[in-house]
Image 1: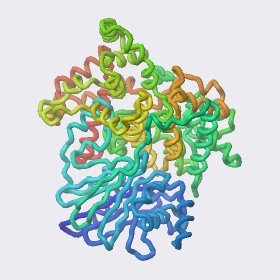
Image 2 (image 1 turned 30 degrees about the vertical axis):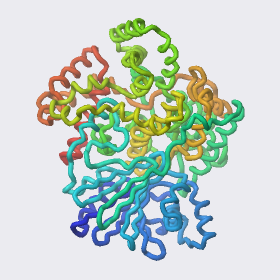
Image 3 (image 1 turned 135 degrees about the vertical axis):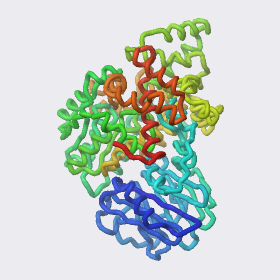
Image 4 (image 1 turned 90 degrees about the horizontal axis):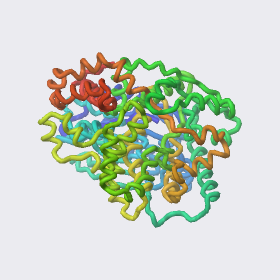
Length: 640
């Protein structure tokens, strides 16, 4: 697990001081060693977090035996020993035991087709010196990030956006549609970043670049195989056994490491089940678990139960070593640092928890953490999945009654969590099922979001709609008719990768810790798409089949309990702790100077939220995140 970056400049040789700046910008991702390769008009950068083959044989940039191919790689190839075995049978010889070397020779043997053989998390680039071509690829589920820039005879790429803006001539034109994404969704789906000319390489895609001409091509090599006609046939017991076996296989692969491994254990079913199964596979290795104390009262106000009680309960029952990280977050000190590491103005406090847990793990000598991210997205664990059960009811209720219910919900008190959810549900109740489904991802209606933007920004935004970006994704799975599976496809193609995986990677790598996600093992993902929906959502029971697996390992008290949130008390912070920050950074004067938002509407939003007329805490958080990002990435003034 590492950091990678690179540049091609058609007009001049590579400036070594630029290479050094790019390297330093992602040094946190690879504290064990840093190096680079420069030849004429191309430069490649690598910073290493040594996990497999800790010797110099694993250092990068790495060359093949002929010296023609050079690779920079970030990630883990969990099935690399099997791939290596096949390559040895073909006559290849290896100097070390790293998966980097396996991947390099796999590419030499199979070319782009090596991607279909990989089960892992990866973002890598391989330069062919003889043909002067650059090959880049990102893993199937987008666990590892990869950004790129192509404009004016310059191509740049990097694990983090901050390495790209090290190039002093990079075009920093703002993408107003991306800002609309961050305001309405709190994150930005698909390719878009706040910079118009910097994009994300999509999951399951590769890219080729001709170093001489910068002619490029991007190709998809994998898509999540949802297809309603390919459901497995079987009974509940068979699906429980098969799901359990897939989890065992995933854990066996992902425990591969030459350094100590720890576990995120929040007290929820997903992370706890991962730790419990690993204990069965490796009984001689005591689970070293890390959790966070978020504060019970604060989380109740957000509408979630606190996980710490359950983390303690299960750790005692299963004899885990439980490390409790005290979340004494100084939100004023941490906020800008969080945005800097995220590379994007995501509006969520969960990244802070990942950062502090990973920091605590690293201080305890742990460089690898396994967690439960992805379980909700594969097996239906969110409240918006439960909301799909209302579709039959909404369909049969007369439209006048639906309209009255919407009017009623608009007038209810929003201070209680249940009322907030009811009001959110009511926003799209008169819409089509598809619009309701995508609407569950939205934190702010499109027409309300438009009011917050300046006239100039609205000219750039035009008819762009963030939710249309999501609905268009479903064109790729026309044969999938299940609303739940359609929703899960959207989860995995957008929210999971562009929100959860982004902060999961960035905030753990900020302190030199590799975060692994066994639920996103490729075999398990592919299998999950063929489980009948009745075994994912059974009545109103979320993650039904996963909970049946968990009954073998965990107490029912933990399995069948209300969902907890992995976040901080945002509403409390916005209404109390961050008042001065809001008054400063979102003042009418500052907003007007920036020119992106409507100062009157922003001020009104803050005032109405303060008076309890609306629930706009996350929108205000998003506005603060955007301003922090603009200061640090566009203006070039790092704060925090």
